Amino acid sequence: MAIDLAKAAKENGIRYFLISFVDLFGVLRSKLVPARAIADMQSEGAGFAGFAAWLDMSPADGDMFAVPDPESLIQLPWKPEVGWLASDLYIDGKEIAASPRVALRNQITRAADQGYRMKTGVECEYFLVSPDGAAIADPRDIQSKPCYDQSALMRRYDVISEICDSMIDLGWGPYQNDHEDANGQFEMNWEYDDCLRTADRHVFFKYMVKQIAENHGLRATFMPKPFVNLTGNGCHAHVSVWNAAGDANLFHDPDGEMELSGLAYAFLGGIIHNVRSLCSIFNPTVNSYKRINAPATLSGATWSPDAVSYGGNNRTHMVRIPDAGRFELRLMDGATNPYLLQAGILAAGMDGIANRRDPGKRLDINMYEEAHKVKGLKKLPLNLLDAVRLTQQSSELRDQLGGEILDAYCKLKLAEWNDFTRSLTDWERDHTLDC
Picture 1: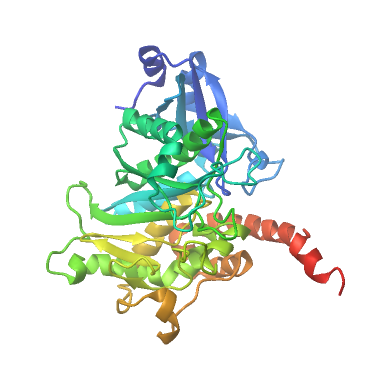
Picture 2: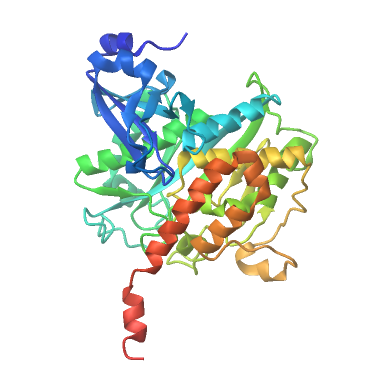
């Protein structure tokens, strides 16, 4: 039986609810609703003007309603009188197909109809920076190889421990926190789960990190490449597919190569086949392509891919097989939409299963040094425009995700690219003012 939100408010001291949704650009939108009104909102939804968010709508469209999913309820650890809710979007009683959470739920339903259930975990990297974003927040964090630096980690203990304690209280099962490869960069990991729950938690995690950092006088950013000379923010996803009951990992085969099943390799084949078309979703900003096509950073490596390849326990590849029964997709960055990330993986994987796609042979090489030796190696797009065009042209994604969301996403992303091309940069002035 679904959670009664009015009853939950009384039992847990919730005075207000944030009824939230994520638009196509990954922006978190909300209305603050008093507990006295939540019963009606649970059944009818909170009203929004769709054109006011990054959705493919016009001012002439009717009211859009965000209907909260009561299973997603999270009390803000730093303000428990407020409850956060993820929502699905409707117009005239019909789900909006071109909205991220609905798109993911539709993918989950399609997979469930075939007896499959995808479970995932995400690794969200972020920087703690000055309030104006101009520099990292810790001026003493200057090592060329700062990864796992205990001193730099502990100088931010108050922020990191508060975020981790919050995840413990929420029951997410966090298990490690570390200083990452860039100065000022951190990563925090929690347990994997069904992909919709992981996506909801991913959305809330980004909000929580930003809010707690702000409460400490700092700013957190998930921007893919905020500093040219430092490693960028990735958002790696660990993926496995289970049976409908969720108690058997269908990717695990103790007798299979790397202890992966034939189903796992077909799913991986779908990823390999479709990933260039998914780049605009996994790497959705102009800035994203300064991470995946970057030269070596201060630490000596970007830790991000620039080509389509997979290997064993080898972090130079786009896909890593770190353990039995799962693989890690290392392409996505911190700007990726949490729902479209999961929907894209599932869509590509199900295409692979349906068409028995072969991922090709595993490459057991250092891609940063030996990629030039690989014949026929497919490279990732060099910029957002190329990436969006690949998405537009993909019949596989159109079949799996649906033309409505694909067209809406590409339309808005092309408009964003055109807006970018109308801007002037310091680089242009520096190099062409005296031409």
